[in-house]
Length: 326
Image (cartoon, rainbow, N blue to C red; front, top):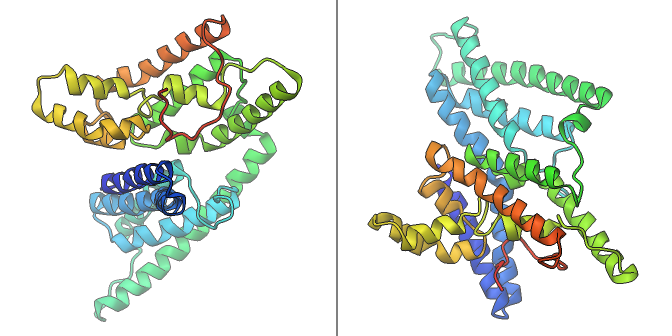
């Protein structure tokens, strides 16, 4: 259900970049901003659509699942400091999936225990009362649980254990980072957004390292922010440019050839949602293996080549959707 949203965002980013490259900076910037806004709303859309699916699966009222889920999502994200900078919009995919699961299960539990009001009054009265009751009970319970978990995590410094630091010259850190990020992609969760805090940290460390190189001629570290984009993300997550080229030139399946031709230009700008969702790669046990291994192998080869001096380290910072060729 979210594939059209991904395509809208992807094509908006592509058109915006092309317009800016052609000299229409204002128009291109406006369209690119639209792409960013769509991606910022993506977790909320995911929560709503997933809540609808779960309500049908559990045979419960959709409004009794969607409304509490949205409120709990905003409250917990605000409590945990997960709001996007400068906005009141949260962006957390795991919570966008876990909260509807918990709420749908809770609503089904309440329904099985006959906690909902049934009377001879018009349906709108019953529905309004049940919505108010379910929302109040679930929001209070899960918001309190979220507050408690946040307090426990802060006291125990669990985040330090679950989210280790990245080193700019540690190959092992790079492999784990890239592998786990693509594991999220393989189940339909945007790994780049899940690890956005790491990406921001990498960007800052890379900026500092490049400034020190300019001022004091210190060595440029290997695993800079764009190192992952150039050597482990050609065509997007999973190094899917190779998959697109295989579909275009090696396969005999006409549908795959048409898909490869359609997404080739997008892949050059590291936009691969049509491949991930259209082929699909996501939840595909055959394609997930090369999807996970290809970036890791590319990362290892590039790391060895760079650290031994065969290839110069990346000395500039570019945007993720800028072409990596040239």
